[in-house]
Amino acid sequence: MTILVTGGAGFIGSNFVLDWLRQSDEPVVNLDVLTYAGNLENLASLDGDARHIFVKGDICDRALIDSLLATQKPRAIVHFAAESHVDRSISGPGAFMKTNVDGTFTLLEAARAYWGALEAEAKAAFRFHHVSTDEVYGSLKADDPPFAETNPYEPNSPYSASKAASDHLVRAWHHTYGLPVVTTNCSNNYGPYHFPEKLIPLMIVNALAGKPLPVYGDGQQIRDWLYVTDHCSGIRAVLAGGKLGETYNIGGWNEQANIDIVRIVCALLDELRPDPAGPYARLITYVKDRPGHDRRYAIDARKIERDLGWRPAETFETGIRKTVQWYLDNPEWVARVQSGAYKDWVSKQYSAA
Ligand code: NAD
Ligand code: DAU
Image (cartoon, rainbow, N blue to C red):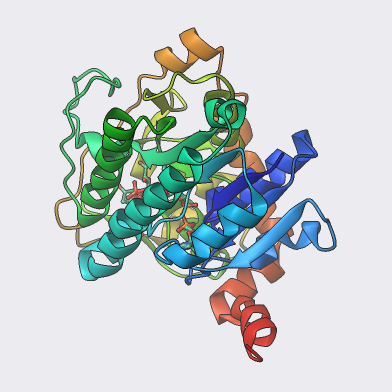
């Protein structure tokens, strides 16, 4: 048996592939086009491991997906591939529509054709797992209850609108064609291999470089943070036991204001790598707010706990300490991401093609 993962060279996808192969010998075919966010160095520990088959390619390429499905015969598709950064979606929404909407559509159509031709037993076992976000639900007021699976969709950014569109496509392919789908909507992840354009890794790498720590607006926006391997275990639980056509929220029960996150990161760095120039919090700089900035996200994760017995293993205290330590222990990874050298592997590998 094999699973097909899309976007498995990105932050969560690469953590998922590593986590999967720590738990199981079931091979992973990893389809990733390697945008700026795809980094095969995240998977360097799998070099020479026959259980990981990397394929460089686009989820919008129907012929490629058809041929991958025909040759690899996966029992499931776990779909991470996406443009994921809200700020980039504001400055350039086109790529988000292409990958998140068209790409998901292409993948669903290929999956439908493949699944439709399977023998009865394989057909019944097949799963299309769509990895989505809590941002599709919009923004909460301070005293609103956390997002439940029944909340209406109210996406506010080009990114969240494109993810909402993809969630709707997945739902419709189940309702109309019977494709066996499950969807997970997760809150903000953090942990190793997080690209330093997102809040937590950006604050760590800027602080270590003595650069300003840019906090948008008043810094009082709230996110619900989940350690990335807890997201991976939640996906495994839903893939194994989730009800077809249903959606499951995944979250850390850990709401924090951005400014508090930045202060926690600074305090950990003060402890683990003190700066002779003074406390890292001196670098905090309030900057212009993100347009349309959602004020608060929070996840009600009771359904996945009640139905599938999932709860996060990490607390924020343990997860953020591991994360800061990981960045301190991996300065080469950070340097190669910042210099662009992580792309060298791709140009060497594919220059002859
Ligand atoms: P990421 O940006 O780090 O990685 C995305 C990966 O997808 C990259 O490896 C990239 O090369 C690949 N990719 C992009 N376009 C592609 C295409 N057309 N074809 C093939 N591969 C393509 O993203 P992430 O943070 O790891 O998020 C993964 C998924 O999880 C996304 O669907 C995102 O919406 C969702 N999600 C993310 C978070 C979070 O906090 N990061 C939270 C909830 C849900
Ligand atoms: O909620 C899940 C989502 O979390 C995922 O679907 C997205 O893919 C992921 O990128 C993330 O979106 P956010 O916009 O919440 O994450 P980001 O790290 O970009 O920002 C977190 C908060 O920090 C947000 O309120 C904006 C703020 N911020 C961010 C950056 C990069 C700053 O104040 N300064 C910054 O420099």
